[in-house]
Amino acid sequence: MSLKKYFLVFLMVFLITFVSAGFFQKYQTCGDGTKEGQCSINLPYFCSEDILIEKASICGCPNNTIMDKDTCVSLYQTNPKEVNLTYILRGEEGKILFTVYEGMSEFLFNSPRFITYSSMQEASRLDFKLRNINEENQRILLIPLVVEIQNIADNKVDQARIAISLVQQIPFEVSDELIILGNNSVNYSRYPYEVLYDGKGICASKSELMVFLLREIGYETVFFYHRPENHDSVGIKCPKEYGLLDTGYCFVETTGPSIITDDENTYLEGVKLLSYPDIMGVSEGESLGYYMYEYQDAKTLKRIRKGIEKTGKINLIRHLKISSLEEKYGL
Image (cartoon, rainbow, N blue to C red; front, side, top):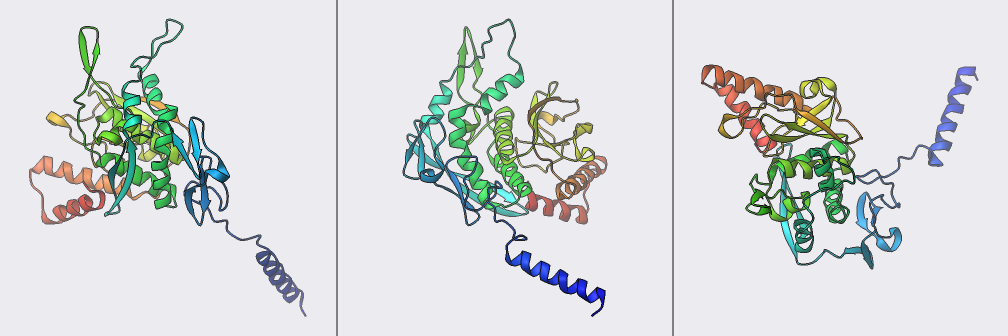
């Protein structure tokens, strides 16, 4: 037998031995990366047959909750109601039936409006946003929504798409509640959980909900704030050439359905975002990759918009393309 044949026989035996021993076996994982049969970092979730399930008896409970068999119960889980959350993924509508609680909503509404420092330091815009998304009791009741998204899609990109669309589909509406500050009153800005509970929110509160979800999924995120236009939006790490104004973060609108990277929307009274935004970092994490179809779709939509603005007309081909994009993203 030639040396080459000896080598091929040895290689085959080697591969068969190692494969049978499980060395090349692909570990099954759940949507958050937890391996099969292990506990998630988000207690009490356990990875079972590629799905995250509550298993407090094995994994334990987070602080501020009480174990009830395999479930962890928060003090604020009172007066539940179901909300139907809608998202669009590649033209297909999906729904998540999610339980929210009046107890948590009232707790957040009655939380202090101010941030107090021991020194003369003043709280920044980011300080208030981080206060809103980092509230520990709220996080306990928002993580189940993150898990629902992770159980729907097994890859982080589609998880991000679902989270973004879900928040965009929540109606943009100014709060009808007022906070009294001395002799003045100001519109109440909701916490992320309250946006879900009330089923409405403005750009600031919807952006906070979106950043919370994207951060928990594992992405690097920032808040964008356009001061002259007084508009909040979200940035998610992506290839620099896809990002907003060379920031390295893809622009994500939160007020309504929009394509990731489409930063040329027209807002109330014809306002457009023309200023360079303040960039407020929130979390480190993963980046969107180069193979995101949204970038090319957004370029196409921008090009069609400019053609319409220039000529005041739209031909049949462009009309069909817009219709296709509207269906794909629920615009």
